Length: 165
Image (tube, rainbow, N blue to C red; front, side, top):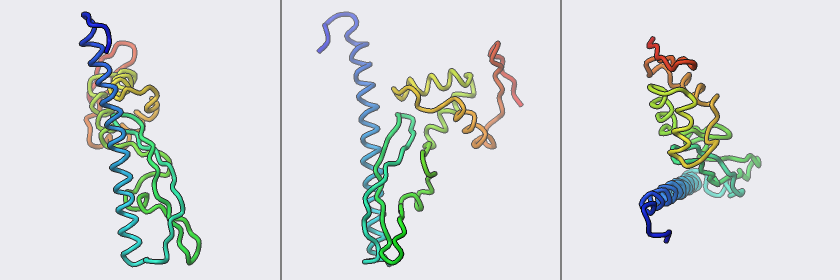
């Protein structure tokens, strides 16, 4: 326990916030692993029983509003042709390397409504308790992808004026 003084509430709050983010990451990891296992079991016992064999796992990265979560996903091998499969990649339609969750995408878009890209990046990293969660260029890519559902706001870098389009 830290020293009992005027800083104690702030110190405890910071430690509990950090622990909370770590717990969220672990809960997410465990939930994804369970869903992956259920998908594999369903697939193996549905119509392809005996023709699919477990072939290790492959670590996959999820970027969430509470930080980066690396999750080992089950890889299968077809005994007929030796082809390797990742059932969760097909079912969840995840990109090959990194998946940005909708919560993170929403936080980026919400932040850009009244902050610059740099301020948005800093607030997301602070909330997640992780530096280098995403690159500044990723923020711009998210806005381009999600842009059809957002009002267009341009914040000029030199004086933070907002221009609505």
